[in-house]
Image: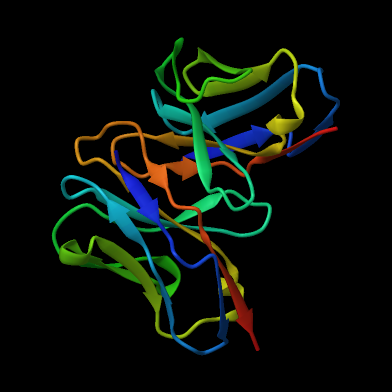
Length: 114
Length: 111
């Protein structure tokens, strides 16, 4: 069965500092991978996705993520965090054959301090 | 462009009362539709998904049910709410590509 682990429940960074949110997945083949962001009381917004090809993917709001097959990881990064980036971030994994089910991690809550 | 609506935005219901949450999608046809529940610290739990009118798959046995009476309408229901049904309910759609797009959510509090 597929699974996603986000080992950091809560992360605090200073505004302007770099950010890396960790995501590890368990899957028998190369999955489809996603990062979503959720502001308090809101739905989830897609930040970026990886299906195949270049292992470094660019997303919206200046985020990027790198797929590392050997480490079963898909970490999210941003070079310089803005106060508006404070939110909860979810990594998700789905099978490559287009089945309906996507598995979400438990989320990492990001706090940005001035 | 596609948009997804959920209502109500918030709901407070007593234990044992019925429930009906509605989700509609605009700007697309024959989408796959999903209901998720989100509890604090537990991520998203897939409750139901639908690939077409009248086609519902249940992921978690519980006192909730779902229906899809129209192509772009997805309804989550319960005959008798439990305290454990409290949470944030999210509807999502997908078509073609593999990412899902989420609605704004409904905050349900069962008292």
